[in-house]
Each structure stands twice: as structure tokens, then as C-alpha cells.
Image (tube, rainbow, N blue to C red; front, top):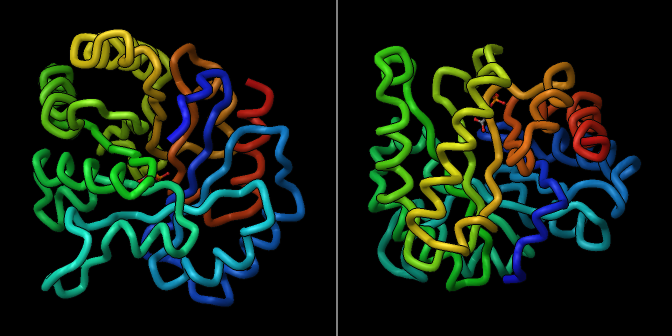
Length: 251
Ligand code: PGA
């Protein structure tokens, strides 16, 4: 993996459990028509079932391919799981790990996420590790504690991936965190990363995720220390996703 180019933002589309073959082809074609190599880095993360198709469609393009999860082992008796080398074989460069939907619905712990991050890096993938507080934690003022523990627990020694700060209450709700909340949290996360990784912690990109859309992207992406966005719902609509990419180009 290359050293992070801190000046270039990265916009990641997390399609979640959406995308039949027809939808995926259409969406990706609309993106291919407009995305060029001069803007931010763009990565789309479709469901596993679309990776082979999109690998073909995207191979000669500036759009990268990501997955939404991977296992910590390279092979074995793990029904339903996907190993990191299976992803690299399909042209995948990034993998989202520890998304709150996986932490909540699949019981993933910080330790699980950390082991997956090690395995992903070993296979040559860039892990995008998600952290974020619940609404209760923010309201009770415990959010920084929570985020601090998640950073300590989810990021392995020598971590050279990306962190995505996604407040759980902002995901899929249409209620993004305010720019003040994001700015304050970014400052805290940077301090924690430097505390844990020293100088190297300064070069870990931190994305914001949670109801990023074509209207709020410009103000969020222009905040200091926001290195890009992890986009769910709005990444399924070509126009909205392209507007977010344009906002990153202008940031
Ligand atoms: P959202 O999802 O943009 O639909 O809020 C973001 C995410 O879960 O990564």
C-alpha cells in the first residue's frame, strides 16, 4: 500500500444490500461517463455478488472497487464468509470494516474488526474502519469516550488504512452531524490517532459518513481534517453521487 496522499479526498459509495446486475450496470455506467482521474479518488462498494461484474466494467477506469466486509482468515470452514484474497482476486482495493450495521446486526466487536483489518492489509487491501457513537452516547456526552475506545480496539498496530467516522444516529436518517460537531470530533480523532500511532497518526485519512448528500457535501468536505466521505443512500443515485464527487473536487 502506498503512503496516503493527504491532499486528495476520497469518496466511497457504500451500496449496502442494494444492486441487482441491472441496477449496478446502469449506476456504474452513469458514473463512468462523468468521473475523471483529476478529481478525488472514487471507490464504489457493491454487494459481493456484483464485484466480478464491476471489476470488468471498472478495470480500465479511475473508479476503484471496494467490498463491504471480509473475514479474518484466508480460507476455511466459515460458511457464508469471504476471505481477503478472494477480494483482491476480483480487483478489489478497499474494504469497509466494522460498519455499525455489522457491529449491531452481526455482533462484531472491536477485536473482530481489528483482526479483519490485519487480514485485509496483509492481502493488500486498504481497510476503511468505521467507528461512531449512538445517539444516547452523544446526548449523555460519552461520545468521545466511545470513539476513543473504538480507535484503541479496532485499529491494529501499524494501521495504514482509513478511518470513517459515522455517528450511528446520522446513518440513513437524513440528519447529518452539524459541521461544528464534525469539526470538533475530527480534532478529537486526530489527537487519538496521534496518541496511538505517533507521527504516522497524522497521515491516517478520516472520512465522515452519515446522511452525506448533494446538499451538505460541500460544507462537510471543506472542513479541515475531513479527507472525504463514506456515502450510503446518496451513492445509489448517480446524480447525487456525482454532485458529492464534484463537491470534493472543489473542496
Ligand atoms: P447514509 O449511510 O449515507 O445512507 O447515511 C452511510 C453509511 O452507512 O455508510
